[in-house]
Length: 483
Image (cartoon, rainbow, N blue to C red; front, top):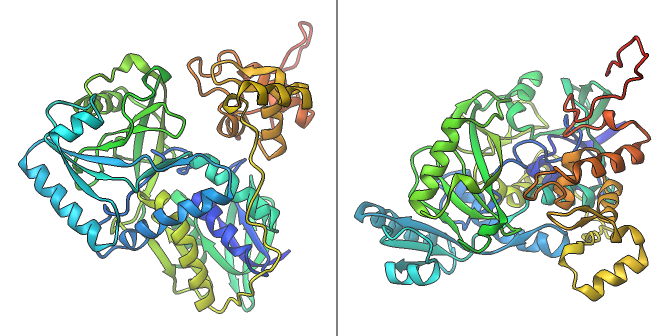
């Protein structure tokens, strides 16, 4: 099939671009190598919508951070994903830190960031009593927020598909050729043709550019380890809390997630593109840094850990723009604050495509909203009773820790979940204290039944990440092989 635009990479940036393009009378394809959208860098980050005042002056990061911050409110009105403006604090331990905060305050005001305010130690103790007594001042940014980034990816993709996007998951691009009338994009599932290609391939961005002879960004890879804490600490800290940063990292943060639990991290170490391991050294660095901000935090409260890899361009900035290959756009090197900037980047890409000759005719039938999934745990008792009367599957609990029902799991499957992570990130089943110890088997069975396969065919996140071994007859002489 021939498309006007093909996007490669279904992280938050690729999904945001796809949704914006479906506002116009265009044929659009989105290719993603993973089994579901948002399973790369976009799921494994701190989930922070930055306040707009941090990115270095004169960079693409700075040009998109504050605009992106504001656009998240618009997206959250239309789409069902967790988003809240809880504010952030950048804290100072000495006079040098205070001087840095003053510079940050002035930079933010020059950019039009609203609400920035310096807090003294007394105000800080009153607002956040569990922060370190060694902190002498803080810069408060009420514009900052937190988001469930995986939910945002799912919602953006679902909205785009509703408006005509062709989403191709489990589709790896193996080659791209430029012809007289556009591009032939070879994949492991056949070839598609497009007039324009948007390279939003994350850690594979340089590899994709190389296929067509376009400029690369000199990508290297920086791993960040994050540690999630038990819900007993909900409310212990109510704002995202930053130390003053280093040249390569914003430091170890304490982040109240949208769902209330605290997350600490990330580290910032050079790695391979596929290295998502967590380490003893990383845990030590994270908890030492977190305790410097919040002394009451302990490793004993850790219930989960994960790592994500950021693609870092040679100049440490975003690489967004035309290339020497007409019609091929690079949107790569999208590290922090890339999540914040994503909706602004999407609008900029629309402008770049128009500059390159893409005709943009606005549709009058674009549907900006999708229905929100039912969240049983958020209902009051009367609403829960009505839900169960309407569908008894909402009366069967699948995940006790997070009070997720069988009805919610089945709704997630209907919306596109094909893996255990797909269910988890749509419903929170498996995100609680037991980390799937009780609900995993229930979710496995529901996924297997929906796909008419054995539970041994269901994976955690695609590929070879199987969870259950195939059942074997005691008298069988052969082993079951997975394709």
